[in-house]
Length: 355
Image (tube, rainbow, N blue to C red):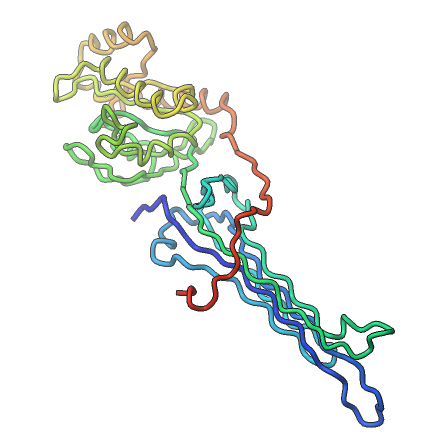
């Protein structure tokens, strides 16, 4: 199951309390204070990790907590620090503060990480309060409370090529012929219900990632059909491969189909609409004369690459054209955000809210 959105609650570890203790040893007439400091609570980190493809791990587990610091002890012993919690995330995860909507971090590359809550500091023991004029202090400090936060996670697939088009435009078939991916293929709308990824071999031993996205329909940016649930995944792609059926069963004009999808992309995001695009006419075995492809190019004013995934006609030309676009494209945009300490972080609620 492909899950690309989730909400989780994270809490750091609270700091350990300081200790109030006095030395009591044989032949020591005046034992001094020896209460140690408590250990620091653990931090919570989110780490982009290769090999994780969805947010499925967070659909059933919503509460994530780091370890508390241990209290200080006598003989000047400091409590043990709580272990940090490092939560593994898919590469491409956007981390938002659920309360404010602020983007905290874009985990765009493997190894990217961010500290979302900071562990509490350990409290000082009475040994730390000893002075020449106060040699037997009874003061000690409690550990700092834990911080907690509600996070909203949003996954955007990172791929070199994104396939877009109306339902039944041949996207899944093309992906299956260009890679070893085996998406579900059917002669009915919305056969693809979730994104599918495949590794495509291009000339010059170049390998790229191709993403097959569920078909778009008119009004998708407003929630029609599968809506904009998967449009955001196209924002990560470097090149858009726009597939058009030259002989659709519903009798719709291929040029109208092209303009419809372009309008949806532009309505969703201007950045998305400005990405490099390669228009591909599919199922050309149904256009033996080539007139449909010629009419399509004249109507939309864009050069079209004609292919047939069934007969493999035009596939070498498509691979060469893709190599030219990928070679000239820049890397996907990476948003860099510092992670300041937010003012709204709440104190630890206590055990009654742990569940």
